[in-house]
Image (cartoon, rainbow, N blue to C red; front, side, top):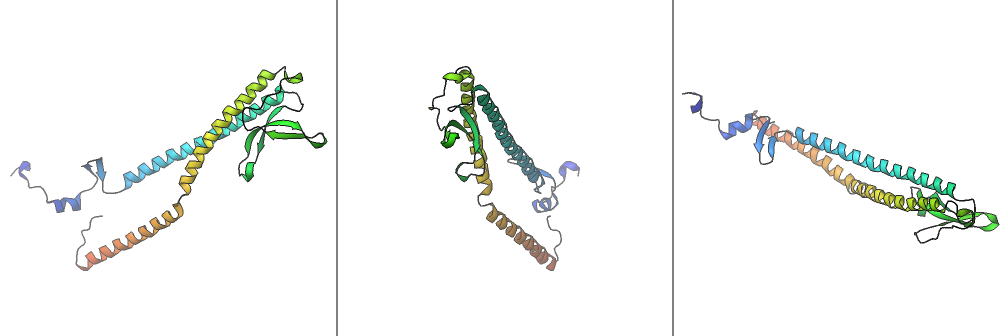
Length: 203
């Protein structure tokens, strides 16, 4: 009898001795989670980088807003009515927010900054404001463009943070309990097999 006439091993025998890869519907299958765990680790690293990139983008926007604030300061005289960018903690928030303000006269000659919430507020262009009015407008336009970019980035960060919060504590506790239970059940299964004299268990 040559090699081509050999009787293949029974399915039961093959399942006990097979190791490594076998072809499945989705490609190569393995008998251990090692490959899958590696894929999770690689994907996690990619997502961490994406979140870091979002924070880096937010910082870049903040620096650009600082340049817009400097442009407004340089292009307008120190008079009532000039526009400026200030960083305020709005509504008790944890993060300071750059806001566009119009500096009006307050009590005792102090400047009273009034927040500009829309583009509708007119820019002062008379007297000393006329020389660099076009440059000041560029600074104001830059503020609004950067403001919208900042809001978009913060919305993305907020969505990710909400997803990360969720029910993660309860879920992790449940996963831990299930793993401990499964390990205990494996020991029980091996013990039962050992009691009846079976030791050729699939690992």
